[in-house]
Image 1 (cartoon, rainbow, N blue to C red):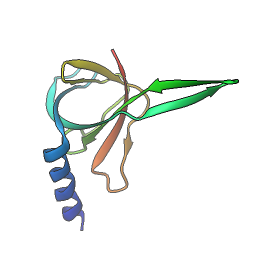
Image 2 (cartoon, helix red, strand yellow):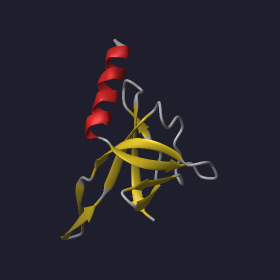
Image 3 (cartoon, rainbow, N blue to C red):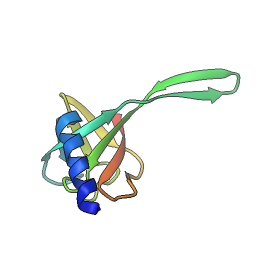
Length: 102
């Protein structure tokens, strides 16, 4: 079953992903594919609501084994830094990286 999930993830990244460069903090850059998600967040601050744009990228565990806060991601010429701890999916095939622009 794991092989089926792995093939499905690979197909998703092949068709929906875009080229990116992942650079571990203090390490060598690696060419990867990412799937970008940019969910907007609405935050309550007292009586005010604040609309905040966010950026989240999914990367395959097979391409980025151990992402960490402070690592960098370059997508379409835009540079981001990983903030917070990356989260892995239940099948342990995909990391979700919360990033902020550099």
